[in-house]
Length: 192
Image 1 (cartoon, rainbow, N blue to C red):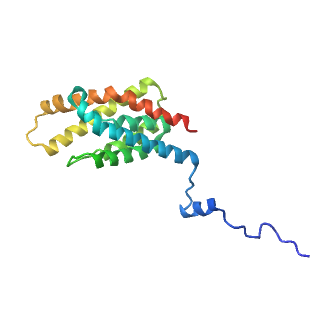
Image 2: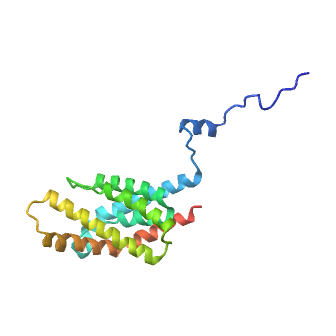
Image 3: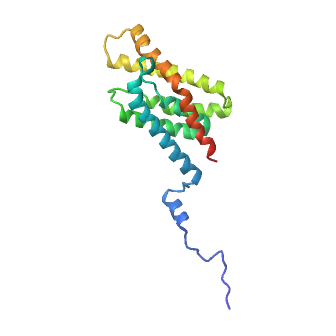
């Protein structure tokens, strides 16, 4: 009687092992899948809110940028990987829905999400003051992007008009709705 060595006997691959091989070694975990679904739902909800209700309501005479505080909130809550991914997806979604001819928002959202996630791990802990600081800094960066877009698309725009009519109202409108975005991003704390 010959006893077979269990290490030498090939075992059939399970479905999970085959799926893992199809994704070239990337594994899909339940937590990552749930976070991805939550992120896409939040981005879709805020994109619809920004492009429908906020275009009619216009607090301070400008449409608030709800995507930027949402990306920052996700980055602070779920860290840099999810911040960068949410930045890319948010920029893609909002640019797909918008009608601007020139835009550089994808160059802003992804790095902001990544850097806020890293800074939240390494230097600043997640608290109200840090979220307020990130809101002010990213709002100022968004103002610079708005100025660049205005100067690239509209000729003969004066700096004072651009700042007073577009940048300052957009900044305050965005800051007004930032708690909504940061509050929604706290859903990621429930996923562990």
